[in-house]
Image (cartoon, rainbow, N blue to C red; front, side, top):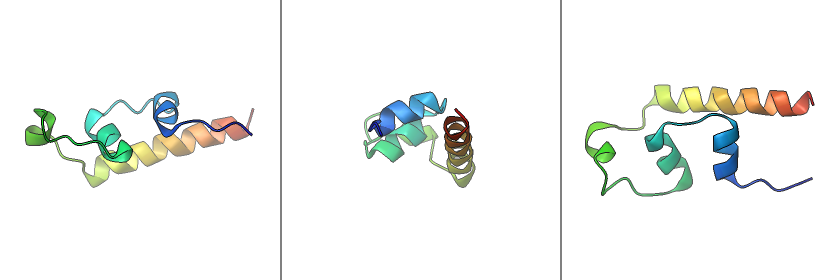
Length: 62
């Protein structure tokens, strides 16, 4: 089984929210405007979880 970096999985799952991506990757948002106006919310994390679950389901069906 191939090892796929988490960042590549985010792309495959169509996760495009930069705030969530930074949080999941452990990157700081401190120097960006996003840190002032955007926060990681439960809704954003739930959406990302659902995207990952859909990706995994699709991969299992291949």
